[in-house]
Length: 480
Image (spheres, helix red, strand yellow):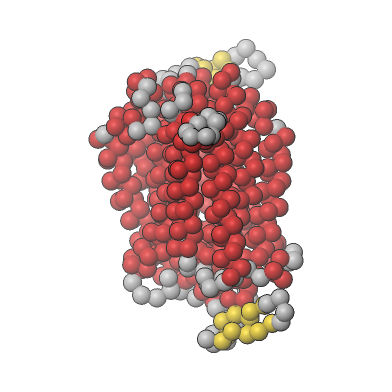
């Protein structure tokens, strides 16, 4: 990403990430497809759990955002050995954070579901699903660490092929475990989660093996697994805003899902399907944003900030054009797109309203995500975090409250402030408003140019010496 034409290089780096992220959404889309063959309560349960599941994924993406920034800048500067050390510390961080999150989540699982408004059969199905997802967290985090490590080094294809195998396994397992095909019992929503657990565990095992073997731009050495406080400190200082960013996005999604709940099961199911369709656009934009992060990081490490700016411009324009076309397809054929997942007329009607209001703003969603990726590649994770807070907590949530509901009750009093009260459509409008305003702010912020400093300060080694390879027996030097 530091030489040659930008668009072809960006495409080469981005398309495996796009496909990998789309395959990540296959987990959720396949679950929704087969769960939809059970009943509407099961669909509502999985829909309600999507924001919580995304909380876990976004946390993993947050703590590995620093990995992409630091590894890519080390690679751009020629510090290959330091990049390897970052990989090992990333694995340690992934295990520690996922273990803590899984333990806390399991302890408070019923409380969380109650706060989200789950009741009756929806509560039972949601609990069965999320209990297994907690067990899958370490695999999710470790795979994200593997993917970020290779991505920082410029290898996006290896993780993509693992995602192909993993998503394929999930799709094959879903009907057997959800509906009870063959000798398997029908487990409903729990079966969807078990299929995800098995698929992610397989991909993670393969990823760790590849890191230990080496040959993919970076390598995991067992000796580097000893905690290095300086590297961990740097990863945490860069990564914690990205983690908070992920939590802010996920908790906002939980709040928005809770806002939808009072409007009935059909609205909740439509919201879940609509968000999954949106997640395809997020997957594309997020992947291009990740490729942009690598391009920006490597170019800042190579001291070519002007090229980093051009990488961001090309990536943003291309993403917005692609998502605009995808939105047009959904606007032309909304009932067909929704009918893929459910045949309930009430759910489809609610979903059509969702698409008509939100799909025209998919390009703005995507543009913001790409620019956030550029900030993360520069190590400016606090800026990316601020954009997420503005989009969701300053624009989206307040607008939803004012537009969707008929009144706001002042806590501790009987005073009710009248609001617009247009119904669930007000929640869809809030998504659109947040997307438009946050994109404008992201563009202005990026053009200020305050993101062009690197986050590494090591002196650059002799470029002929690419890596000091540390084996279990002795240290040897690999020379090009």
